[in-house]
Image (cartoon, rainbow, N blue to C red; front, side, top):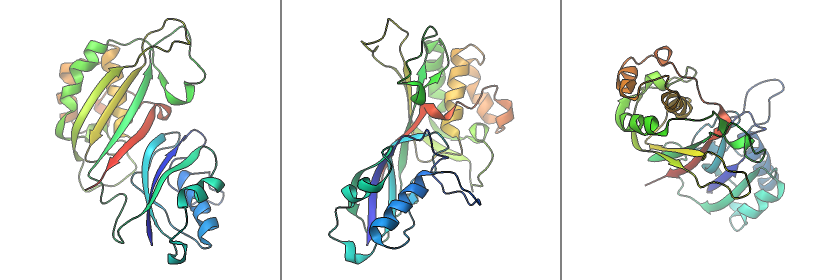
Length: 257
């Protein structure tokens, strides 16, 4: 029986989604989930995620498929897995899927969110694992840059090395930057910003490079009107912006046919 799982996790203490083939492998989301599946299923079960989130990256809606014994058909997989998983990994929903469903190959589009903390005077510890403390930004300049990311482009200039792909073209369907309401428990502060982007697929660390590009625009290091020319270079080295740190990023949603 093929299962489809909706999984949320705090990625802070994990070396990303994918199991690493090392003598003493670090903890990963896939590794913890497969260990829990093995405990419940009574045999090894391979878990396939919709995307390979990096070390320190979080997820609200990672989609996973796996094949479990037919003898476990009536089991409450959500509660059973949550009973043995670490508390920073939770199965939100579990259902039987079509035998040919594939969490990664069948995905039509994915949405990621990246959070930016602008206030310089303090950093709430509760938010530290989930934001990039980048300081004050020119939000108007960042909004001016956003439309240049929409549509179908070759995003090689926003791709870090490490994964071979057939094409570096992707279609960005939505790209928004929103100021979040101030938290009533904190002193007056600059609003936290949330960058939300949806595409038919993403290259390695593409969203983190997008966030770095927008922050560079907000810091006056890159002119928003120069973004198309930077993309046209197809060269990551030509973009004078850092790769945003992983903790601000979360996989939000995956859509299927």
